[in-house]
Amino acid sequence: MDPTERGHAIAHMEKAVGAFYAAAQHVGNHPFLEFAGVMASYVNSCRRAHAAGIDFTECSVHSGTPLPIESFEIGYLNEKLNCIFGGRIVAMDDVRHERAEFELA
Image 1: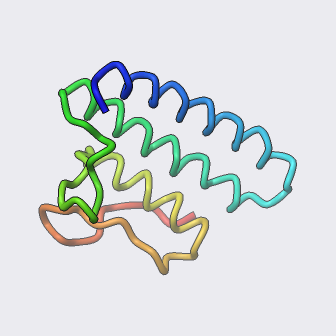
Image 2: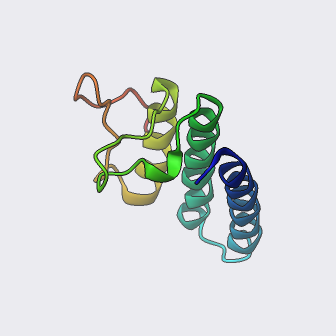
Image 3: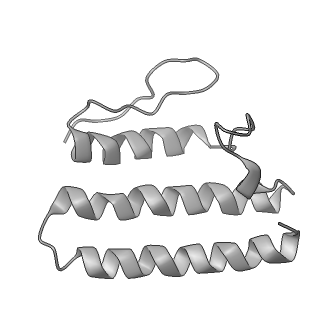
């Protein structure tokens, strides 16, 4: 995508996260609602990558180009993943290859 297309994509992703969150609130399952936080974190990382001139749409394990992610986001994601999956899935710091710090709820 070119920079203009990426900007539009981010706006659409934000709308999709908002729509998911609104719908998920009616389910009555808190862990399911936490997926909105995971998605919002992804959008925030994409926004930062876009601001740095990185095509976030090309960042994936398939391309071999990692999405830049701030260390504080790893901790946040671990909080969300812990709530959803009970600690069985953990976001790792790609530099240190160790668990990021997070509090168990």
